[in-house]
Each structure stands twice: as C-alpha cells, then as structure tokens.
Image 1 (tube, rainbow, N blue to C red):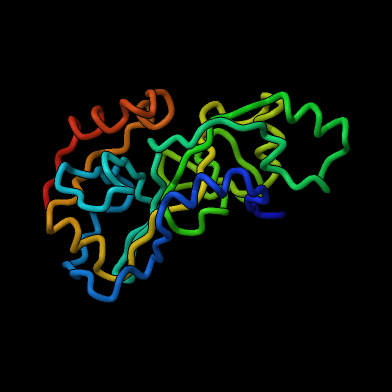
Image 2 (cartoon, rainbow, N blue to C red):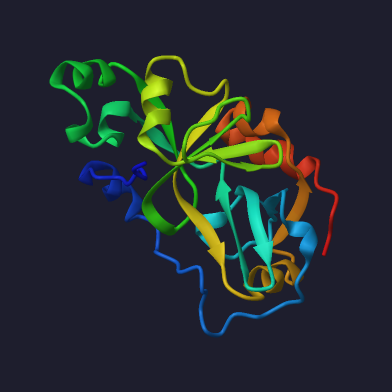
Length: 211
C-alpha cells in the first residue's frame, strides 16, 4: 500500500500562501486543561479567532488526548484538479492517465501541517487497505481510492484534503479557553453536501459546547 503524497508543484504554489505551522505549536502558546470531549466533534472557529488561516473554519476532530490533537478542515476549497495530478505517473499506463485527466474533483485545504499529504475523508460504506474508521466517518490514504473515485466505484461521499490541522500538548485547549473555538456534533450533511462557503454558518448555528 502506497500512501498518497502530492507530487506536483502547481498545487503547492497555492499552499505557500499559508504559513506552515507545526503540530507542536509555538513555544509561548497558552496551555489549557485537557478536554476529552473534543474528539469526534466539529471544531468551529469563532469570531474571536486571531489566526487568519483559520478564520471561519470548520474542522472534524479525529484525535485528541493529553499529548495533542489533530483534525481536518472541511470548508476551505482550494479549487478543482484532474485526479491524474494526484497519482504517481508510474502507477498507470498513458491511456489510463489520459482517462484520469478527464475526471476533475474539488481539493480542500485540511490545515497547515504536512500540506503535501493527501487524506480522503469519506463515508463508511467504502473500505480499502488503508482505511481507518472514526465513528461515522472514515479516512483512506492509498491510491486505490483515487482510482475507484475516477471509475465511480469509490465512496458515496468524499472530500480530498491536503494537509491537516494539529496542536501540541494543551495548545488547542488554550485556544478554546480564549474563545477561539467552539464545538458541535459532526453533521455528515454539512461535511459532504453543503457548499463550502456555507458550512461555517450552518455549523456554528448548531454549536452547543462552550469551554
């Protein structure tokens, strides 16, 4: 199984407009108390968010423990591109590659960490060798899922996402204590069906946890 890594310069140019942020966080960040309730929720930026990269951002939180947390932003669309540009040319013939150029899909920014790494966030009925299930949602990171999407054999719902959002120990909790983030239940309809520019408005209306 080969993990999908972005190989093409054209897309990385757009990503350089964002500052790279380590999941360890800045040395002077305010640490907060660990909250186990963050995992398996939407993390939604509030109007008090001071980091412009995360302005009006909705993130699906996949992991959170006392050592840190990570998730994927779902409402920051970078554009669309042919699936062929996401797949290593050595993995298919010239004829197959020509067909892959005919299928274009939306590409999302998942966060400023490891922006060449590709995550396919998708519905649970699909499974490949790399699939990991997180409650009502799954992630796959092998080329098989991209070939299947191109052939209309992939998951019923999916988002192709570059990079992820990560926080070091106590960092996210500190940001939440400063009211930069709020939580709500994950809504799969918002995740996969809503227009990207409308996801934040819908998600924040459903928020229910204030820390």
